[in-house]
Length: 307
Ligand SMILES: NC(=O)c1ccc[n+]([C@@H]2O[C@H](COP(=O)([O-])OP(=O)(O)OC[C@H]3O[C@@H](n4cnc5c(N)ncnc54)[C@H](O)[C@@H]3O)[C@@H](O)[C@H]2O)c1
Image (cartoon, rainbow, N blue to C red; front, top):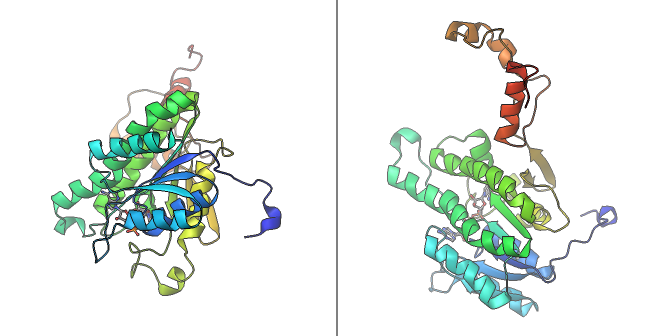
């Protein structure tokens, strides 16, 4: 890191964080880095090693032996009750929950034609429903404290598609929808909701990326982005941050300005005929909410009407 360029020292002193799926990979890295900067961390993960030892407890032991504060939880985010218990544990042990990093994840890759719909359900349950359950449990506590930072973990697979990952892509894109609305609903209570689209060498990506990339894609580099999004200092909401070794980019959902027909009633043939103008990306726009798009369309459709 080019330390001389860092003007802000992000601290998580007196902050309480829950990181789901934090026994290994990115979640472990997020948890260790949060604790290293002062956060009290609930480390969630149901996984065990070959000897039956809890992966979450192992991360807690690492944090505690380095002088930090953490507690393990072994529930599955795919259970509403377990998600509630994770948040309850943060509150009972550390008094509140300030930060939620929805990181837990699994893969069930298969081309769509050959895929098993039970796997589809499972992937949606862990990534999308799990993030919704944990966020739902954390929201009232954050609201009460007028402070919250929620980080969803999306993926380029959801943003752009990836062969063999229909279930995962759907779940990861669904998280963007969840983020967008929670960002709108949380704003007045200083609950900011953002998404990390990481690339990192973990169990999940083993064999799935060229080795020379995996050798460089340390989870900590993606965690730098997660911690930035989770910090008090970051005051934007509804942001998607792509993060990998030294690479950080903002991903946006945008719209072409669109083509306005003279009449409201337009045939499919006319839409086809104007497709080049409709999809022209020059002057691309970003809407902060569905209401903003409706207002834009209304203004063009009924010029002069009171908005
Ligand atoms: N590694 C990447 O390049 C990459 C890219 C895009 C997105 N992601 C996302 O980042 C997140 C972390 O992935 P990773 O690469 O560290 O993978 P990983 O497999 O190393 O870690 C995922 C963790 O989630 C835990 N988990 C699984 N099901 C769970 C459940 N029901 N409840 C709680 N925990 C559960 C696992 O036990 C595991 O420890 C995932 O959401 C993944 O989809 C990773």
